[in-house]
Length: 342
Image (cartoon, rainbow, N blue to C red; front, side):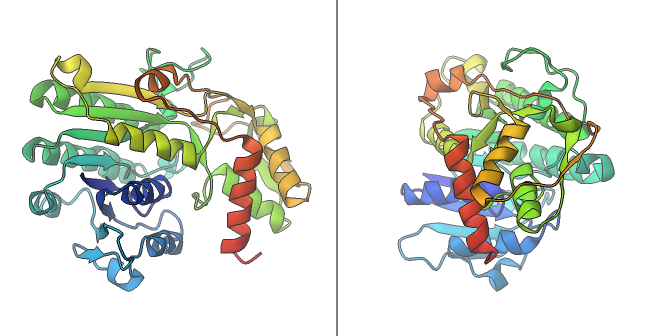
């Protein structure tokens, strides 16, 4: 299949692109490579995919991977570009679209709300319009566990109410689900939304807990522990996430039975909840150093606990998250030390 992966220079998009190509698919990666965090990490991910960094900096130019027998190409493009995006769809003739591009981060949405509307709402509308006009079979897209807001029922299920988001980031993700439902209903193409929980692993984002804690402990800086450590998260290793996303992409969606089968939402996580302090302890044990902990109150937009019920994903796609916290943390720290020459 020919597959467009947006956000291909990002954490999850990079891993999904690599996995798809290794399974024999023809992948075009798209990313605007913004400066939400150090772009060098994004270019280094692309380098692993065989993309020349200098060429990748040029907007609207398709760059081919230099790796032999590796069917990957990359284009730097903003989803908000209403002229260039339809031209890409028209010229490339994609079968499937996997939209992982978004302005991420709950706390940053308090500081720069415009970036979230431009990328997560306007950009997603442009993706839907391009899918509609180019006979795309299936759109798989990233939603977020943040849509559950202050939901106190554990574990979170997709049947739970998500009408009360507590951050603009969460609101944009809820809007994506509503927009996808509308397009599946009106135009008949399949859309599958994935509510990602806390993803971690090698090549992870520098603004996320795994990276922040590791970087601080190794460099003898205090770590910020919000809500005085009374937090739990459904930490999910990147390989488990990637395998789930790829299974959904590869399995042909049946849209013959109408809207119900054309539109679907899944939780994608580890099917368990881990105490934040236990997560920190696993990092400390792997590094061999005790963290200096700065205990802080809950931050605006944060929630105390997340836990994904992934029964539907197990039933429909045989999804099996099986990476333990211990092995996942170890893999990340080994990558961090190698990448940063620690």
